[in-house]
Amino acid sequence: MKKVYIETYGCQMNVNDTEVVFAILAGHGYARTEDITEADVIMANTCSVRDNAEQRIWGRIDQFNIQRKARQGVIVGILGCMAERLKEALLESGKVDVVAGPDAYRSLPALLEAAAPGKPQIDVLLSREETYGDIAPVRTDSNGVSAFISIMRGCNNVCSYCVVPFTRGAERSRDYHSIVREACDCFEKGYKEVTLLGQNVDSYSYEDVNFAGLLAMVAQVSPELRVRFSTSNPQDISDEVIYTMSCYDNICRHIHLPVQSGSNRILEKMRRRYTREWYMDRVRKIRSVMPDCGLTTDVIAGFCSETEEDHQQTLSLFEKVGFDTAFMFYYSERPGTLAARKYPDDVPLDVKTKRLNEIIELQGRMSLKSYRADIGKTFRVLVEGPSKKSASELCGRASNNKMCVWPDSVHKAGDYVDVVVTDCTSATLICKLK
Ligand code: SAH
Ligand code: SF4
Ligand code: F3S
Image (cartoon, rainbow, N blue to C red; front, side):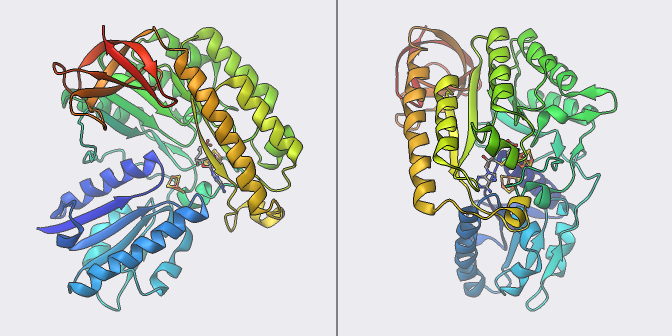
């Protein structure tokens, strides 16, 4: 058997795609290895969302080439979004033998077979139908508790800064029968949590089933199976989805709702199809139906033409909402996107960094406030395993997605445990068994 090693970068969809790739390759006589020095095939499943994500991967390709030179016959492959975006340019570097885009993984066995020195192979065709719905992913997470299930691929939005529609192609939803089957299968194998993945889950649509309908179906697999999902788009998250969440205890009380900016002028240039007021209204709705719902977000500082006033709007929105956590970035121009073609990337790097740091600093305070507000509360957590810091402590998430740690020598990964919050940091709830 040939051994294949894959490093995964980027979002959760990429993590799940790597699991699909392992499944496809397993059917063609490849075994997974986590040791790069014994691998016959070395691959990276890549991300293009920001320039530094790509730079990191170029660095890894150089590392892979040390193995490729040292051991004859080793094949280096690039999968995922960077494969799709850069195409032949990757082959022209002379450092890569196989390039396969996100919709081309079924052809990987043939590409690997055909690749030879001086004969690199490429398939970056995007598809309107491919969902890998019939493939049972080889789970790569170590705890055996939580599994990703992709419910759709691609994206039909045209956020002006974003490369994803170019790298992942048109949006398509996966047959709900195969999604529910996969969730059942996970539960039978001992998994206690599934996360439904899509770039814009609220636009899920297959035959007569929308996202709210799908959520309800997956929630009914078992009350012991937790359901999470990501990512919701503020313009599309419906009341029906919010009410459906509130109807099922096992649908976790957490919504990741990327806001990107607090300024209407910038949101319009970003081609996000909502306003600050609409966003605040969605937050109010979520909190009125589920007062205990966790809320997290993504934000971009220093988008084209952003003024100090626009930036202040973002800060004030962060202050008003009080997110539990946020993924915070400064704008990185992506070639080919609408913003790159239409707007100059005119906020100087030092200003972008300064604004980003102000958002990070504010969010740090808001996180602490949000975590402190949970002190004294009791949460049911799903044990993920030993905590990072101590072998005598376990860790797991509360329904609202906050990480809890507590001393425990009794329970194990996959158990549900009731804990009381006694203290916190801005990223962890410190608890004791109830
Ligand atoms: N589909 C998700 C986002 C996927 S990309 C959504 O619509 O919310 C993940 C995050 O990366 C985005 O939410 C955005 O905050 C960030 N991002 C995307 N393109 C970027 C760029 N060009 N520069 C900086 N951050 C970017
Ligand atoms: Fe990118 Fe917008 Fe699609 Fe998210 S919704 S993947 S930000 S284009
Ligand atoms: Fe990156 Fe592609 Fe995901 S660009 S964020 S790996 S969809």
